[in-house]
Image 1 (cartoon, rainbow, N blue to C red):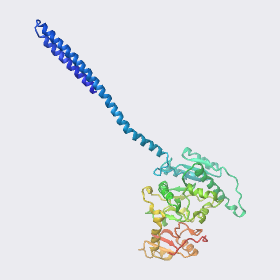
Image 2: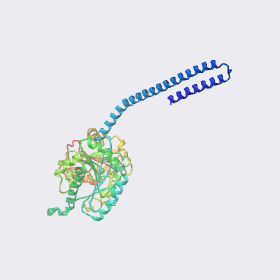
Image 3: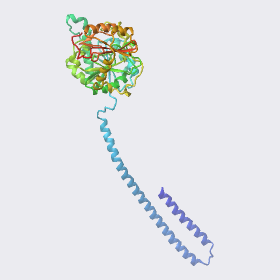
Amino acid sequence: MRRRSLTYFLLAVFLTWNGMTYIFLSTRPANKSRAVEKIQKRLNDLNSMIKKQAAIQISLLGHLGELKQQQFDYRRRQIDIPIVESIKQQIQKSTLPRHDLPVVLPVLVIACNRPAIKRCLDQLIEHRPSETQFPIIVSQDCGHAPTAKVIQSYGTKVKHITHPDLSTIEVPGKLRKFRGYFNIARHYRWALEQVFMVEKHKAVIIVEDDLDISPDFFEYFSATFPLLLSDPTLWCVSAWNDNGKTSMVDADKPQLLYRTDFFPGLGWMLTRETFLELQPKWPKTFWDDWMRHPDQRRDRTCIRPEIPRTSTFGRIGISKGQFFDKHLKYIKKNEKFVPFTKLDLSYLKKENYDEKFVQTVYSAPLMSVSQVVSGARPEETAVRIQYDDKMSYKVLSKKLGLMDDLKSGVGRVSYRGVITFMYNGRRVYLAPPATWSGYNTSWN
């Protein structure tokens, strides 16, 4: 642009000079031809000089442009080299595992012959924030065609896999009435093998086909997954609270989470490493009670919520409605979205949790069950009831409306022998003596 402007300028000077000379000469007398010739010669010389100068200037401008282009190219190369190297490094890093990126947590739905699985699948699809991060895998046993039709109606929104072994399992005579539990255990093992061994997922969220889920179900598992990985004393995260009746939870604190020694199930998360540990000895039946045995639990605990993130509508099933009418149908799932991924959950790590938990429980004033039931000393917002043996535990649990069964000495939702719940609007701890040293595995 600058080169073209200079050329135009020199051309304008040349034309102006010649024009003025022409006017000057045209007004001079004709008899002075010698002077005219002399002037004309000088004009021709000047014209020649101007042309040479213009050519030199144009050449210089061209050379200057080339030098600037070379300088620009050099500087660009100096800048681009680190940029290219940075891009290469980013590409290389992107091929490696990134803990700051959302992990893929598939949802494994265990199904058999319940067309009402549609209710469960509809909620999973409605509430999941990402189809990529939370793919849904439905594993179906039984070969039940109406249920298969419902599952297949979702197309690519879910992945439908079917258990290939529908053979009849040989069951000892006294256990034949529990044949369904043998089928379930076999199916669970196969389905988990598909998730971990075939599809190579790092962890899985497991639900059954008769569960409703809360709006923050996926948020809850997203936030607790890092805890499950970082704390070796944890081996599962559960969405369930066995004593999660409306009257027994603090409705104003849906963000509350606890550690529990009891394996809750009913919407829970398991890592691949833990499954690989369990797989070689997977039981033939009653897999969930097997999980609660000390040989499997190995003093590890689970995370569970104050208010459940699941509830069950499955009255009819293998368990023949056991506990449903008396208990399970009263369990209410949370309806308030809690942004768990924005909360600091480090208090749930064992080194942060235990000392404070013990101090909180045993600093609460001791009261009798009759005092608690009658609402005595209402000024006490948290109280403790003590049990001393298996019998007193069961008696007190029934009076308080808790599930009273024990698995290898561990009560439902128990942590360090303590059952935490709400009663008539205040916090209650059903606890062993402060000298408690461990579970009595003979309590069943």
